[in-house]
View 1 (cartoon, rainbow over the protein chains, first blue to last red):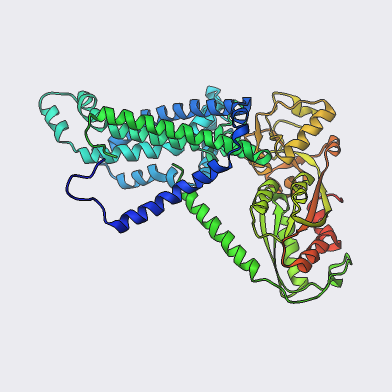
View 2: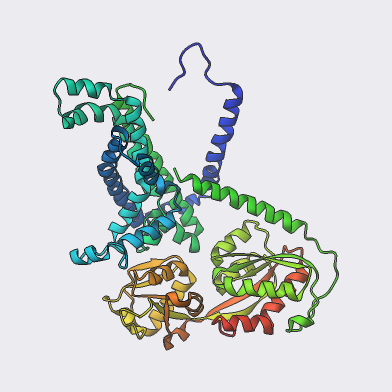
Length: 271
Length: 271
């Protein structure tokens, strides 16, 4: 986004600190790229273990993002558009997975959906076994990624305000029509960036998956888990796979950024 | 895209390493006391000062105890520990981490350091460890023998082949001809134990000492075939240590009667 004409934008000292900050983020990435064994890169990342892990990661992160959208949009709407007692508490609880160490998140999920967990009786009745399955991976990823979508969307909903919605309603549109034709199109850019953040978080998810889902090639061993394991025996492979993960993340974020800019029709992005 | 929590953790790690380095460089001991080869600790006159011992995670309980006893027997000395997976520690040491003594859970990781000429002299083997079946309290699946783990009705969690406990598991599988249809192949013993103690898995393969260390949260089922894969623990002083005498004194303490007593109480075997 270009600064408006005439005013140069930010003081120089702000720029200086921003550059230091950017270096802090970029240098470790550069250090990693320097370590990549380029000669071995292709065999390392095309091995069966690696492709299994990458495909599993993409599948589960996609599913987790979808789940985040399905439950996250209503959650954000309720938080932004309604008032109820204890709303502040509910909002902080929704944020919980952000501050919870992922490993603890995994333990909490285990205590809920595990064989000896809170939902043991209904799950036994329905014959559902989640432990050590791909479903467990998706649940773990959804758990840690959900706050990103809810937060992005709720902020956008508040910023957009209710003016257009109120006008739509006075013109005779029902609540669902207002939601579909006015509210959601208005916050679509925020929804897209929230979904991208969730996807990225799900892609990098490690601790909760390891604790809750286990680690088995093609079933529960996602790319971060494969990296963690490879590091034990073959640091070169770990670095190569990490590079793949970063490349995928950049690709997804870039594409979604383009898409959301297109969707916004030139309007300033909300997030 | 990762949680800020992680980057803070990384910062703390960096700070800890820097502080560790400072502590190390300030611990130049001017004392010229020599260390005898006497196995008994009381006969050893250790010079004062500080050493940092990098030890395999499975040694945490025993080495913490030995550290306290060593300090009591040698007033004026401080032993600081860093416990992690052996291969993690090797990575840290080759990366320049300030260690004086390294105790590995297998000879393979020690060999990486001796090959890199980072160990002074020849490492000494000081303990052995064998695998045992860990089951949740009450043994709900009724696991009695190693062959039972071959049944697909029993949910067994093992270590991945890339880590020492997994390599030992594979050795026993080959020796016995029993193939374990594991539901998960974890990256560490701790993760296997977690799945068993939470009741998520029916059985897990971990070391005898892990079962003992886990207390009542899991029950051990020993099996004779475990003798086909015996893990040997070597210990050695780093070539770069500035506290060579004190490092050797600590190694003598571990291999001496006190050290061997504590290790044997924890379930370790004689080298």
